[in-house]
Image (cartoon, rainbow, N blue to C red):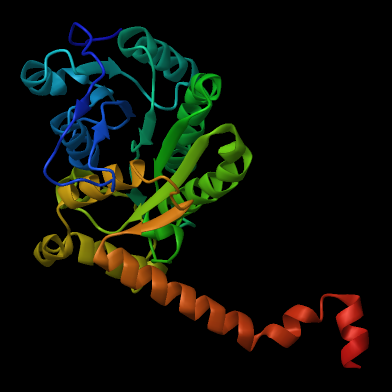
Length: 309
C-alpha cells in the first residue's frame, strides 16, 4: 500500500541563506504534505527538503516522487493516500510518526476543481469536490491532532483559495469547498490554540498547476442560458492568454514555509499579489454593501425596530 524511502534523518539545526524566522536558525522538523505529485504540493515538498526538513509526501501515485526520494535519501517518506479515505489518513500519520518520530507541520494541499453552472453540474462532481477539498482537510486534520495534542505543539496549514473570498461564475462549487476550508481553519484555531497547535488557511490566487491547464480542466456541460456567464469564465480559462496570469507555485510554496515558521500566524492569509488585491477589494465591497443595507439588517432585531420607530 505504500512506497517510501529508507532510514531516518537525525534532528539537527540547519543554517540557511534566506530565513523565514528572525532567530537565524531553522530546526529540522517533519512536514506532512498532501497532494504532492505536481504543482504547489510538489513545490512545497521540494522547498521543505531543500531546507533540510524531513517530509512525508502523499499522493495517489507516490511513484511520481521517486526522483526526490533518490535525491533526498532518508529525508523523504512517500505514501500512497487518497485524502477522502479517513482511515488511510490515520494510517499515513502512523507511518510518519513511526518513520521520523514526530510530526510537526501538516500542509493539506490536495484538491481539484470542476467548473460549470450550479444548476447543470452533476451531483457526483459536486460531491467529489466537497469530499476531496473540504472533507479531505477534515480527515487529515483529525488524523494529525492526536499526535500534536500529545506533544502540545504543531502547525496545521490548510491550502484554501482566493475563491474563499470572491465569486466567479462557473466556479461556485469549487469556491464553496474552499470557503468551507477557510471557515474550518478559523474555528479550529480557536479550538486548539490553547493546546499549542496553530492553524492557518492559506488563500492563493491563480497558479501554474496542472488542474488549471486547459487540457486538465474538468468542464461540466451547461445550458445556453449560462453561455454569457459561465461560458465566459470557461472560455477565458481555456484561452492561450490565461497562462499569462498564472503564477509560479514556487513563490507560494516559499511563502507557506514562512507561515509555518511564524510564532503567531494568522488564521487566514492571502498568498500572492493578485490574491491580496482581490481579497482586499472583495472585503471593501462587502463592507460597503453591509453599510448600505445597515438599516434593513438591523430591522431584524425587534429592539432596534422599536428604537428607530
